[in-house]
Length: 274
Image (cartoon, rainbow, N blue to C red):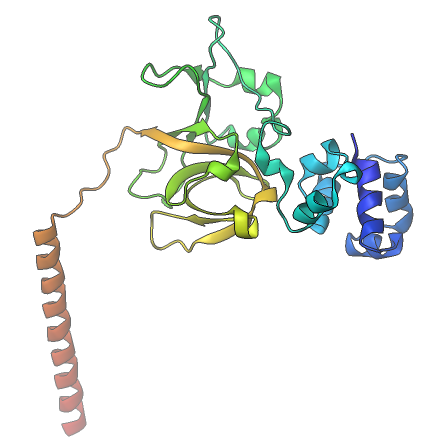
């Protein structure tokens, strides 16, 4: 692990004192000194604080010797293009396999999501998740199924089981496609994604339900990404009105609105005369 040497290197590279960094992270200077000298070990909340402060993922802070990077690599890192997004060199997916040595499709229910936030990299936790197979999916790829909560992706019903294919290289994310993301702050979310990694190191997440506003997320806040494959539900989506019927419905609503306006204007006129 390189956390100790990395936070000291980054602090000095930015020309900051221990007092500066400790104040920014709401720590005592002696506590920061303990982290830099390897005397004290930070908890997950402190690791996340350092990650946000330096705009570098926790995995990179822990596993990569940042001082050994070239100047150009350091520049990319500082601009938010974390090596974490490049995939297999830094990210290893914990999975379960059957007796035939083929990956299972694990089921992450709504109740299991809380445990997933801390157990996603724990082989024991993953092995205890329910699992199944879908014969029409490739044995050469990794899939996982998550239970959908809420109506942000309506007309996909609340409670549906959404299956995704594991994305190793996040630079291959296709804008306009649906993905399941496991994030630090929001947990598991299912969204349409706009890929702005190359320019800004960020993704823009959109809901199918227009009442929900899109929002941005920095790639360092993401832990896993799964490309949408299919969903399973015991509910039928609400029917979509045929185009002709939709226009008729809109016209009727417009006529109703005009009648209400006319009635309202007449009521005001009568009140004024009275």
